[in-house]
Amino acid sequence: MIPVEEARERILDYFSRLELERVSPIDALGQVLAEDIRAPFDIPRRDNTAMDGYAVHAEDTTGATEENPVTLTVVADLAAGYVLDTPVEHGQAVRIMTGAPMPPGADSIVPFEETDEPLREPTQAAVKAETVKVLKAALPGANIRYRAEDITENDVVIEAGRTVRPSEVGVIASIGLTEIPVYRRPVVAILSTGDEITAPGEPLEPGHIYDANAYSVAAQVRQYGGIPKLLGIARDTVEDLTAKVREGLDADMLVTSAGVSRGDFDVVKDVLAREGDVNFWTVRMKPGKPLAFGAFTAPDGRRVPHLGLPGNPVSSMVTFELFGRPAMFKMLGRRDWERPVIRAVTHDRVVNTDGRRFYARCIVTKGEDGRWHADLTGPQGSGILTSMSRANGLTIIPEDVPAAEPGEEIDVMMLDWEHAP
Ligand code: AMP
Ligand code: MG
Image (cartoon, rainbow, N blue to C red; front, side, top):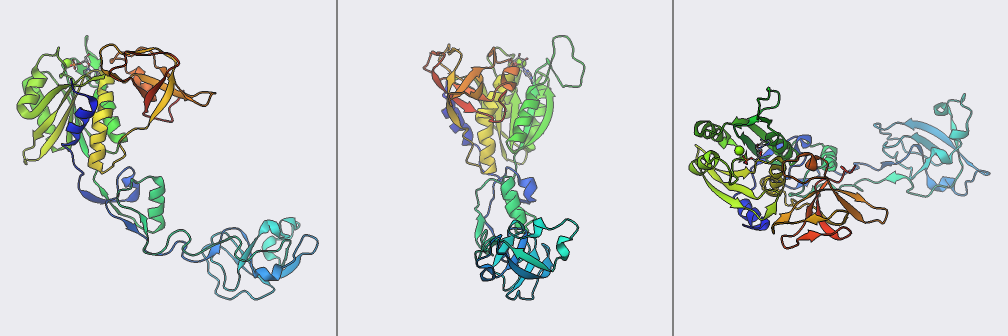
């Protein structure tokens, strides 16, 4: 048996970062920037008001209070999107809306709340008022957003290597870009194998089951930033398996499920071994002991890495999580594939029978004591896929720990922070 880390290292050796492509920022969500993004201009481009109010000379309002307001003449009404070039003279004010550039001369914004505007009779149209009473002394510079306070022209606003999230999409849009350089998404070909497997939507023959693995893995591929390519189901015959495997060789990675465990008819293993350079491993983990890994050679000579997942639906998902996801992240240029591991109090006795690392499915919640608590999601058979769908984490019970007792703290790898019942 080989340890999880060794299997992962050997797998990751086969992968490298993919080529650069230029895509729209929103399509690049989850992809990694291949070049620094520099700002073509300052943001904000000009000093502008951070509030709706009046642009004034601060010194004109010295000593203003509710009892002794200062009255100014309103000379203009300025909406966002418009520029006023006439200077504001002493004794004057410009009514101004958030985002509008500061008119020349004014050095402070008095918010509406600090004027008589909210106090006026509703009949007296606020916009039409020729004067405004300032009820509080304004400080120079108050409520102004200064030119370049966010971004300075030519600065790097997002460094190469950063992952594009919604906030990066926003920053990129704010400097006017419609395309950015990122590393291409990997295409992952996915093949289910087995005479008993039926595609959802088809009638189910006696003894058959629906294909869960192709879909859960395709969803993982999409969630982790790749493009799944479903190859369908190969029957356990040399011809069908060979043909379907070959269809997957234009992808960046080929994933098969089932047929790699000991008890199987050897067709899948035979075909994988004949068509490619594939190793059959037993990995020191539960679920997911049997795993195949290697590479095929595409007709154009490219080497296509192959990950052969175990057939049991939980094993298939957990092994893809532990080995497929880091491989995808490496192709995407992401370095943050390590999931957060937290310490949680287990409520269950988690028994580890045979010296393998146990990734039991659990639900992590925050307790009233402020600590994290973990409950197993019921029976942990590797065929029980709802144990996975109820979980937000996987316990990590080390290989040499026979059991974790209730009340003990254990490591939990978090898959999902949102999903807690
Ligand atoms: P195998 O690795 O072929 O021995 O399969 C192990 C178990 O996983 C068997 O019970 C299979 O029926 C089941 N299995 C294999 N492929 C799938 C699949 N695509 N979806 C759901 N279960 C599967
Ligand atoms: Mg089988």
